[in-house]
Length: 73
Length: 138
Image (cartoon, rainbow over all chains, first blue to last red; front, top):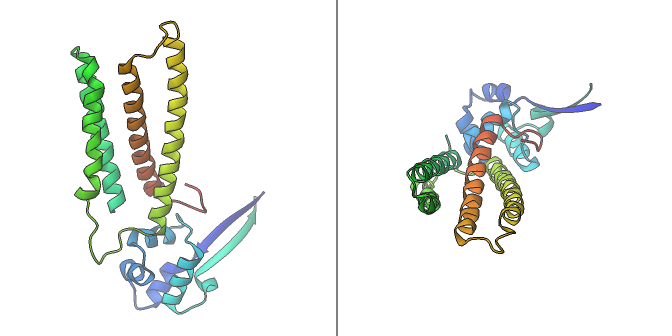
């Protein structure tokens, strides 16, 4: 059975962008810090709009921030 | 802890306190007022949005909160409807021979539904924040 998983590079991108805090990223993306924390931890999959906002904050494409993996189990 | 969680905790504490007080009332013999006490205390949940007012200039509610709120309401509605279905069948079984359902029992049924909805919604909200919402599933 195929199992899908979304991975993200938010933590790495935050540090590459002047050690941006979760709160700073949250303010720029227009969400709460808890949501950024949940996305980073893989506990919440953001909407496409939010995913684009996060990517725009870092100045990169969405595929650089989020990766979709399909694994056979 | 965000505003939604604070409201959920407050509502849960109010409902549990109301239930405990209602049980104490029932234990000391004033059982007919126990339900009214539970309803009276339970209605304090209505002041929670005022107690935990939204802070200006701060993002208090986003898409994740909205999802958790919607799921909590949906699940609580399902639980409450199931409760109603079971209780109505039980009322039919227990009071069929008497020909009518006593008013007191009807009030208890409605207050029980209120308790069921608020408590389950609070618990589901708190659990969703704790466990996270992943890939559209809680």
